[in-house]
Image 1 (cartoon, rainbow, N blue to C red):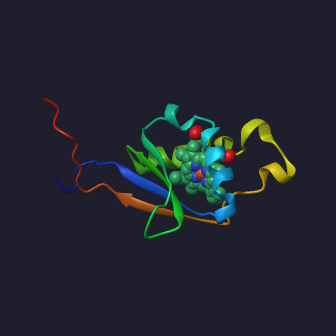
Image 2: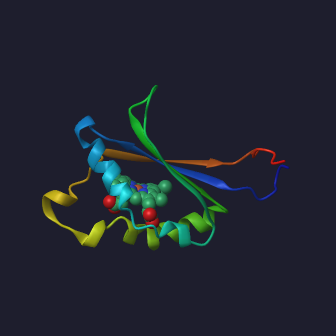
Length: 114
Ligand code: HEM
């Protein structure tokens, strides 16, 4: 399989103060929903920490690095402007920090369906 084109995983790691968790989740509930239409997009999950970390993970999977870069340089920025471009108090970031992790998918499996 080495050298075969497999997907890339991009995880945005968000540090979220306890009192900002609800705000963060509400913002994601109202997210743009644009990523779904982006070329090469394969998967998104917002992961809420339960044990072992207190950081939220924004998991995304893409057909290729190029597809991710294309999203980052355009639709991503629009999707991060927030609902109706609100200002002031309302748009203060819920996260106090963020880090981007990048992975290549080496192996994958899905359930066998009868
Ligand atoms: C500067 C650091 C970042 C912060 C604080 C942040 C936070 C957020 C928040 C609060 C939302 C909900 C929508 C909104 O209110 O804007 C959102 C949407 C999203 N974020 Fe980020 N984000 C950051 C960068 C990134 C990066 C680098 C990625 C790449 C994996 C990413 C992936 C996503 C995705 C896929 C959505 C949903 C967009 C859609 O529905 O079209 N974010 N982000």
